[in-house]
Length: 629
Image 1 (cartoon, helix red, strand yellow):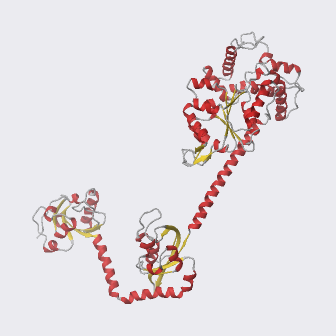
Image 2 (cartoon, one colour):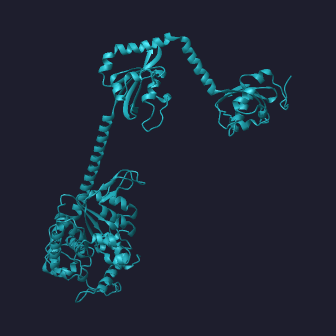
Image 3 (tube, one colour):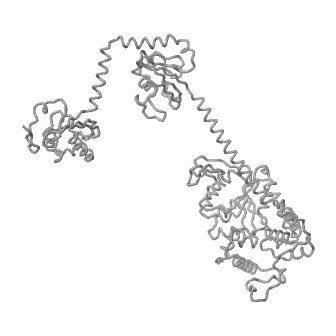
């Protein structure tokens, strides 16, 4: 007689009630357990009466879609099974279950629940029982196989430098050669008959547990494949580990896998040698990179400074500077060179370096005004690969590049206030870390700094750190502006004339007395750099060996509507006052910006027109408060 799904007292017979297998009858449409036998109650850890009427989905929290798909499959096929459903035990843990569904009348479904852990245990017990029934003859046969291997290869086993041992199909050690016993720190007799994995292979190098099932040695007598491993460790009796390479070769008898023979070697010394080689190669690579950077830097410096082969002049100011260089060059004292732009501060720094004991090492120049704020640390101290976006390789910083030599910090007054402390720390501690690297590197650098600012006034205004200023101002040298040493102008001009003609590949024009008088009368607000530009322009414009100097005072003052009334006329007599000089400089910058459409940098820019460095001109624009058009 059919059973109604709505009948709460439905009876499914004694086979259901007392069966050894856990069974549930469910109504999928109502999401309800209609009946549960005692075995199901035990498996699920719940009361049998409490299961009746409980929602099926409550047994499978979070698995309602899978439950619906499964029951629909049972109803469509008549019978279906799955391992995907994991009902919850009454204590809250998930159960590993095989669920077999069978369609019943009235839309009901019979679920048979099989405990997979229990099934596996029965299989293990069945396998053990099979071995036991096989009797001692099977065990004796396997022992005889390994005894024959040991006896037939006794000479090799004793003479081999590699460790060799055998294990049977249960992972039990059958023999150990002397080299293996020596490397492992055990007596061979203590290892034979024991679980070798538990004795010497139980833990990964990082300290994590190494399960038997993951061991390649044991895998050899499961899959019959030779396993070679070169990145694991064995553990000695005293608890220390050593790196090994090993090969696990399966042993067969009449086609059956009966165990494996393992050959291993201690590769500690080779790993140490590899690491030393790696470090040496890294050091060589770092040195190669540094030498390449030094060579590239020196080539650049030679190109930029080849026409300044010394401090030229005979004026008292130049003689005083030479004496100061002689005094300080032989020491490692920090030097601060001050003076207007274009007065040859870098030339003084180079002369100090060339006269010092560091002359065989490079002079490394850093234009502090040209270093972006976000790259300050990387430029000065270098960075490790991956330290920030775009750091695709290690980079040597300027301090490291100047190690053993001289570091010239040009326009040091342009370093942002919040970054000055990092520079001060390196100067005090003579060590630094690359960006993104924890290793501290010592550095031996002689520092020469230069600025066109009044750093003492900058300190007073809070724009420069006082402690950094005193650290830099150990031995100050002032570069004298060209207008204060007119007697040096002919010598400098002649030197520049020869250099410009040589670079341009033209005959050297003659410097006449009239040219000299015109040069010495000029005020030279751009100092030596301006003079250099005038001379080079004169060489380009020279005709029939005569220099053509394009100086402001040589041109007539325009009187038409295109005349520039804001440009001060050349002084007729006597030097300009400081206020007049600043007014003249400001007017010239305004005029140059207007002519160049506000362009400062690059060809056709105001900096090129005025014969100034772009960074210097940018600083003056800011100092004068000029708004670019």
